[in-house]
Length: 232
Image 1 (cartoon, rainbow, N blue to C red):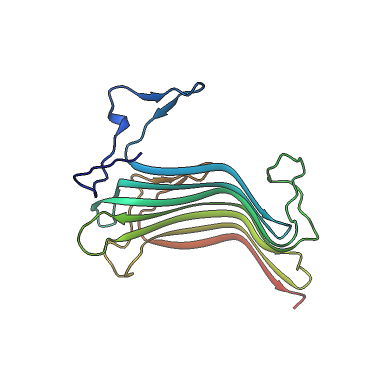
Image 2: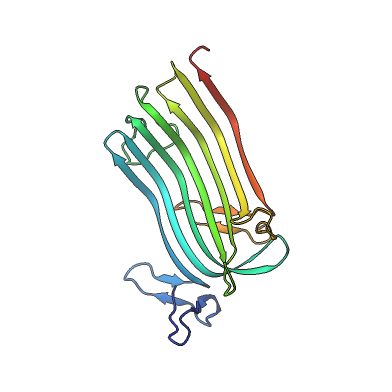
């Protein structure tokens, strides 16, 4: 949803279809498409992308990219801020780097799913069921360098080295990472966005991830961490 103003090239004004008296629908010859955009937006997403390089690199999951303008958010000092937002998300991502393959598509449906077998002879790094939502908010201002804010939430079932258990074990499960901060001086005010009253939704190619932090946050947790060097 884009607009062009020859009199004001810096304008981000676009059509707000939610305020239209009549719903704007495009006939397609099949299911019609209805426009419900409010702000300037560029978005692309896919429910399943599979990338591979021989048996050495494998990546599969849903992904989405989005660029919006004119998004209203609130900073931790209570000030309402108009921002441009760049967001990137992914869902149900399985990845492997090493001597594989590691993942086995047991039912041959083209999709790696929970419960399917893995190759016990593979050696490398695997990540299972990773989902994440990342958003960078840039304040719209004509004075100085615009403040930028970053919000991130990521979860994964497992990240582990596989095939090296006789020498090295590194296995982390039920992972959560959360970040909400200003991308500038850590002593800056405000220090982050307050998204608790109006969570920001990040498209992922699957279920969206809601960013709903109320203040500055940097946190990481794991339900189970196993580290070992041989029998030592």
